[in-house]
Structures are given as C-alpha cells and as structure tokens.
Image 1 (cartoon, rainbow, N blue to C red):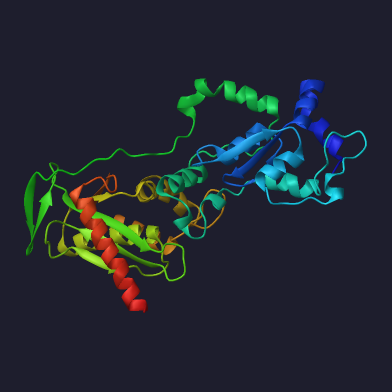
Image 2 (image 1 turned 90 degrees about the horizontal axis):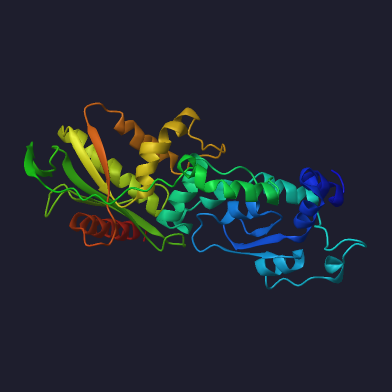
Length: 342
C-alpha cells in the first residue's frame, strides 16, 4: 500500500491538481445511514444515505470535524489531532482498514439479523438495493460522482427504483361455496383473504409474534395463531400467507387473492425469490436469506399448479375492514404466543 499522498494522486491524477485539492479538502460525515462513518467522496456518502429514512450527513473540510459530527462524545488524544508537516489534516490510523470498509459495502447491514430494526419501507428499500440494482462501490472521485449526478435525469428510467405497489382493495363481487364453507370472491373469481403479522415488543427480550388470516365476518376459517421459529413481524407475515394457501389447497380452492400490508412480502415472492433459488437461497452479495425456512415453504406451496394465487397490497391502519380484522387476529396470535411461552 502506498503513502496517503500517493493514494490521493492515484485517485485524482486523471483530473489534475484542482481535483486533488478537492479530494483532500472534502470529508462527508454520515451519522445516520446504512453505515455511519467519514467518507472522502460524495459518491461514497450518497451510497449510505440515498433512500435511507431520516438520514443525517454533512460535508466538512477536516476529518476531525467530520468525526465529531459522527461521534460527538468522542474525545481526541493530542497525537490523534497532530497533523504531519506539510499536510492539511491528519491521516487515518489505518488506510487499509479504511479502504476495505468503503470499497466493500455490506448491504446486509441494512437488513439486520432481526428485521424489527427497519420499518416496512426501509426494509423494502434495503432489500431492493441488494436484489435490485445496487449502486457501485464508492471508488469514484468527486468529479466522477458530479458527472454521474448530472447524467442522472437522463438515465432515470434505467435506474433501479424501489418496487412499490399501489393499494388495491379486493371488492366482493359474489359468493362461492366450497365444501361446507362459503367465501367472498372478486370479479375474477378469486377467493378473498386478508393476512397480517404482528409482534409485541418486537426485537426485545420476551417478544411475542403471531399472525392472522381473515376470510370474512365470523368465518369459521378465520385464524389467530402464534408464529413458529424466529419471533419477528416478518415471520408472522410469511406464515400468515402459508396458512391461507394451505387452507385453500386443503379445500380445493382454485383461485386465491391474498391481501397483505407487507410490500416486502409481495416483492420477496414476486421479484426476488427466483434469484434466491438460483443462488441456493443466497442474496446477490452471497449473504443468506433471512427466514429461509418459511420462504422455502411458501415458495413450495406456490408451485402447486392446482391453485392460482394473486397478491394484493393494502395500506395498513387505513380503515380497510379486511386488513383491520387480520391485524386484530394477528395481535391475538401474538397474545397466544405469550401465553404458550409463559
């Protein structure tokens, strides 16, 4: 590894002395993003904050100011603030560590071991960054980043966007008898069912998770169940869909419309699962898929050609009766989990 000055020349030489001065003068601090830290270029900083809810970042002229923005409580020893003769700011303790940290971003840090750390939109965005078209690693110079940003408007249609589904409420157009049961169906003949997951004290010791499946008012097949396995809200969402599909298959229902308030669940099944299977249930960055046992079971059920499944997204807590009732059943399932574990 070369000296810090040599590294700066290697990054900025193609763009002249002015670019070198820019590289040396600018530090981008991220205190809230996918990975907090200090970055040398806007491209690296943007990678951590773009699409991240409530991101906090700022540009500084010195590393010390940037590091204080990231960690206001840190105190610096005199040798940490010392500036080598002829330099405008102190060099990092380890260039190798710093370069590896920036050039090999670990996107899965935005999808933590326990998915309670991210809201639905943030989790969906983080997963699309991995499974969709993630931005390149932050090795561009500031001038290259500026040029790319100027081209952004022209290339907007080609860029990856976070898949987001519009709310679509299934309207009952009739009734269908299947065995001893009667179901509401939509205009295309799909049996209507609402599913939801719930987790009390999500991510804390003693968390309790459950799921709800709602076919209609006072329907005998409505279900409130505790989850099995990992105790998170997403597990509840997946297992609710599994329960609904198993019920439909057991009864011989041929068409099922699942309404869920989880964008993440819909995108996982309709967009990403095919890639996971091709890579032996791994993400594009070779990290394992979370909740793989449940996703495998759900995917296997969806391969059954005797049942056609349609996915509808509905907004949560907007007064949609089916969603509200599925949410109520899911919370009852969480309470059952607590009773079973106590």
